[in-house]
Amino acid sequence: MLLAAAVLMTSTALFAQTKWKVDKAHAKIGFSVRHMMLSDVNGYFRKFDATIVSSKPDFSDAVFDITIEVASINTENESRDNDLKSDKYFDVAKYPVITFKSTSVEKKGENTLKVTGNLTIHGVTKVTTVEVKLNGTSTSPMTHKPVAGFKVSGTIDRTDFKVGSVPAAMIGDKIELRVNGEFSQE
Image (cartoon, one colour):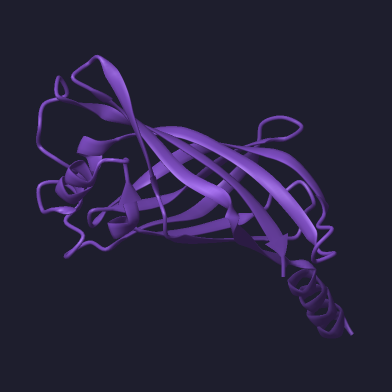
């Protein structure tokens, strides 16, 4: 009897988990870095995929999984983009993807989460924490499925990931992450 109850509870818990997939038409993975200590250069990645698995409506138990194609980097300057793709920076031939997989989520406010996970860039994996704001949930008028919107912010140090060896006076070490996205329940 006890075994049957345990199996039933496990099945219910697994069934209750819901998978969410990014709506790429309404999502952007962006960044900003200081150039020559004077101005900020903004960029984004055109190709990426992301999923969320959660059993709670506030996503406080979510697992975030993101994969970015580094070759899709775009700073609106082809010469700079090609330089960033080269072995001087990202080395996309050797390290074609950036990945993030969350390992813990801590609720920080009504709609704010502190998400920690493993971020891998340029073959280096570091524990990274970002702030995730749940903008809200609704039902899509097109698909009639639940949708959720998120805004992610954080800062990483490019030198931790061995991306570029130029001094911070030329290209800042701190990279601001700015991610927005809508996710649809599958």
